[in-house]
Length: 414
Ligand code: GLA
Image (cartoon, rainbow, N blue to C red; front, side):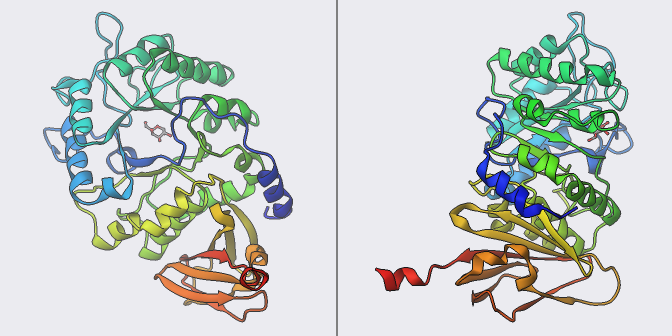
């Protein structure tokens, strides 16, 4: 799985990613909030007014995003997922929001979100129905794209349920063109490869030309086994998917579930670190109105967000698996490197990793400067290829480092 990674890393460095969808969006991985994992298809506003899919939920999230530092940290998009529309289109064939749960309609909601300096995302489906059985866009791509543009929506998540897999490519490309034709900048989030993988290897060149990010693998759940399965899938398909990521288009391993119920704090740190290494969209799905301070601090950690949003725009890789450790490395701007050390042994206590075993450590020749970002911020100082430095990693936790090569000779030469 992690073999031949250096060849791949070289290829990634030498060959720039293929043409991205040319809409000027997602030059860095998208950041925001998305309702699905936490709130799902809860439409019962009589019994559960606080958590049902309604305009109130998004307005409250937008309020909190501004008040509690999320916007300042970079989280920008407030995104609606499935279950927002009425079961019927209107007399002109347009989608309409459920009138009881969205009495103001989507345009008003977009105005509200924009008044907070944030952006609004919406959800639709390339097929006959959405995954939860609401009207799909098949046969209505232009109408729906125009409706979303008229509502001043800023992002579309386009699902792939209820669609003949052979028509997926055509459908996703047609919607991309329809969005473009509206003249509004609408970030386009696809699930095309996820629905194609069971039948054929997706054409990532075409996907990158069509979408701003794309889901490859199953839905994330609020559990460590779900996070692990996403990481395993990514590592075992990295030669295919990593080269397609870059400014304008990203692989999407699905939402961050940090701040919910299923992950220990170490596991939450692992998700945050690895999503940053994978240059993944950072779309959190939790209840921002009620989140524990430690999870909030992790999600707002500026050093990790800086790795995620690094201007070089290269997705990282799993470079080695050894002794129940996984090493994931992402090249950063200014020749720096982020290294995530994941301890996959779910028994026992913290274990030491001999840092010079990380394949990317070669950039420490002759010297480098190392900073530990997780679990605590710590300057680890100047290191060499022969360092004896051992870093500690908790079970199912991740120690995240940044490494900056220092050319100590430069001073002497000058
Ligand atoms: C699919 C998608 C999820 C979510 C649901 C909504 O499963 O992959 O992310 O949008 O549909 O029904």
